[in-house]
Image 1 (cartoon, rainbow, N blue to C red):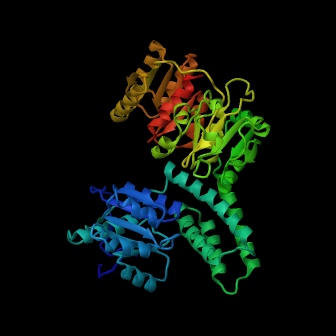
Image 2 (tube, rainbow, N blue to C red):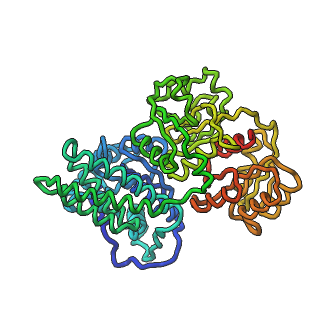
Image 3 (cartoon, rainbow, N blue to C red):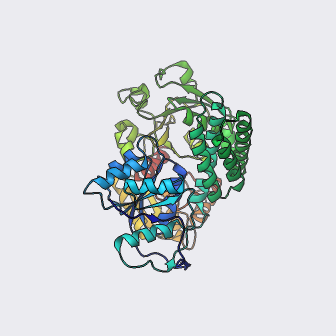
Length: 535
């Protein structure tokens, strides 16, 4: 056990700003039960060049150490189940892991937090809310002191700029989850209200909102934290403060809502969508998205008979695939009614491989679990049959542990060996995609620029084309526009390195048939192409 605790709460005087980029790569494990905290730290440290993995609790982190050996673990303390101090004690007590540096991310009182961290064997502590401007430097100093390479290099590296699509996606997630969670706290007030849990949540919001650029939310959350820490509790004041916080979360969320194309909203208006076996949290989110376009969500238990009249009258059927629904009739591979249904799914590879073969081989549409409202609506729109929007026959839409799957009623078989144009200026991605599609029986016509891609589409008449958005000469949007202007009968999938909702909507307005965000799951690309080739 280490006898010295490193104070990581503030940079020393040797820190000076420099535009240099880090040249090292250290394996780091992040452990925290806050998804926003995890994602933010992961972005910051990955940007600095480190190999970063995450765990949402102590038990998961301990299991990961069997296959991943980090040099440093940054861990939250107050987590469900085993806390961070107990996890640190277990790691430090084993010969194989005792030399891993552990730094506690603590909101506890400074002195007591440091003392408990030292007793547990931690090598340092960083206070919450996390200062994004100094986190990378603090981590670097800890690693340098451990390796005894001398005093820290006086140069420091610029932190991740809080702009770009990943941060914007994180902001949207923060606002969505904050709206839902603050409503839950308000509803629990007076009956099952837990002041300690509320205080922890409010403190987390205070820090994250400040970092993500929402000072109003940070101020309101700080006020909630102060109120729930007082004794005796004043329910009326807490209720008013939580109500103000909910309104601010909702206002900020509305401000970042991306408008849907009119034809998408129109196609989904009035559609009946069956939600099978959903958890309350997932049901609330997807219902809110569907109500945005005046679609009608209907909730069913996983035990609902797939042949019931109530379900069969729905336009689309969504099944939440998780441990509680794994054995339900909707996922029974022996049911012939699913044999003609086209499915599309995505998620972690392990989750996909655990699904029945008929699901993995006949997928047609899916929605990733961490979707935004625009994503779920666009995916449901794509699951509808082409033409006048006639009501499809029922077939399941599945949400695997990390995904929601949509099943439209298409029954046509794909072309045996379709010709696919693949265009990307990154030679590695181009090689990987071409090799992947060839392994799935597709003939590939590669191009490393937009001009060649458009020429191949015109000359070879392929069934589909996979186009990178950012290419020299003609970009993916321009190739797409040229294809549609010439009325060429080819299905177009765009590849983009960043999930910018406006770019995605622009792609569909220009006539794209689908899109993928890099890095993408190989199953995802193949499944999307198979769906398009059945049209």
